[in-house]
Figure 1 (cartoon, rainbow, N blue to C red):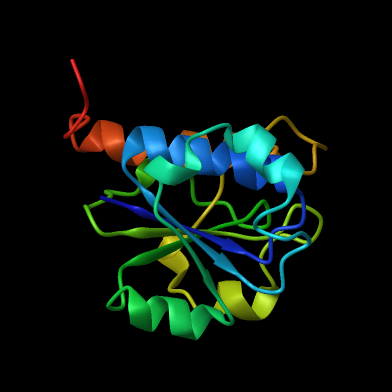
Figure 2: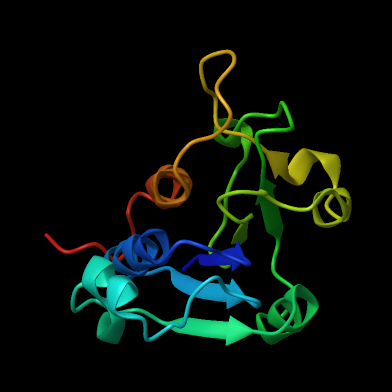
Length: 155
């Protein structure tokens, strides 16, 4: 239903948690190389438990290749350096949610390539730098899914 794109993720347990999230929400996961780990790394498998087989996970060498593979979806980029709240967007099935690495976030050049109305942030208390990547992804995916009345969920 939705696509999660991680731009050069660095921490295996975060990606493992996101794999589990995608398996449980029906989202697909796309990671953009270089990665800070091997997709078969033990810490990634432990965090994702046995959910890898239930999630669609693809690695791409560059963002442009990923977007072409997805048929040029509507892309929303998330950053702590913008002010438009994630909750103001109207998400549609097939949309893609783009998140940067844990230590650097999305590069300014990638963020600048998106229309301003699709550069979104999650609110935080003043003087805090960022949320945990897997938590931020979960907040966005569940808001988008909620807007679709949790279509496809089990009973």
